[in-house]
Length: 348
Image 1 (cartoon, rainbow, N blue to C red):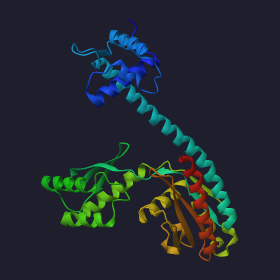
Image 2 (tube, one colour):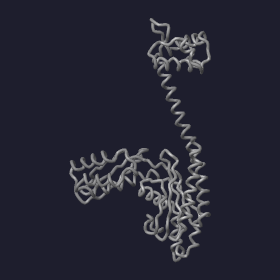
Image 3 (cartoon, helix red, strand yellow):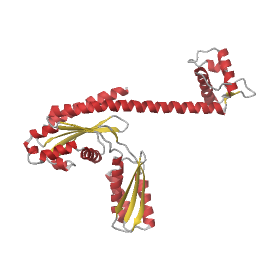
Image 4 (cartoon, rainbow, N blue to C red):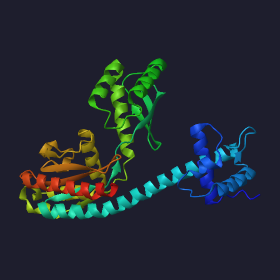
């Protein structure tokens, strides 16, 4: 007999299995007819159940008029559920891709609006996944004062680096350090590896605290490597020439060079997010406080936007130290609430 199931048979089979899973009792046609979405007579259901039995999806225990699922029935049911879940995931991914495509158009426009409204330079990073977790660290000795550090982060991004260490580590010391690092850090995101955890790690490592510090640098680099395709949109770089203190000598060309240099801006976004632990509030960096050398004569105001699920990006306004802070903060707050409204609405 043809083993292809039509929609009606699938619905009846699912109803039988669900009912049997709930009750543990063989299921009769009368019970199934109570399923409101079926709207079928008991006679029709009996015929369909008879076909399902011939096909081997359900069986009839000798002592009962009802049916129970066979292994083949269970297998079909499980495969259906898995297929449905896969479809849900695919739909969600497609939705996120559309949302991100739409977002990138919005971000380009936002950078232009920010620059025009403030008369300063503006930069916006596209959304990236900010909750990359550390999966595994392995330290191995290569030479007396050289270690191979292998760091694996979520998405199975692997980073191998050699580090030079001042002291020589024995096998047991190396094993202890591996255990200490993995038990302290595995499963944490970069935001969660905070100063408390780092200082406790160094304390536990005792005389080997310098090795821990070198390894932590590699962990940070590996997690950062996961976000290297970060999109950055800039606008208003030439506004820098409006301010003599930023345009004298080669200051303006350095600053404009930075705004056109994607890697430097990625570094800036990363530093800002690491420093404030991913805090979504507005941050102001004045002069030397900014983490990028070529921005030391400026003030930079940043804010994070958050689309939920770890998808986050950074907005920055770069201008002279005498910038109109009140106006900039007001413009940024207004912009963040607009962005929030535009994308959170889609989820309702």
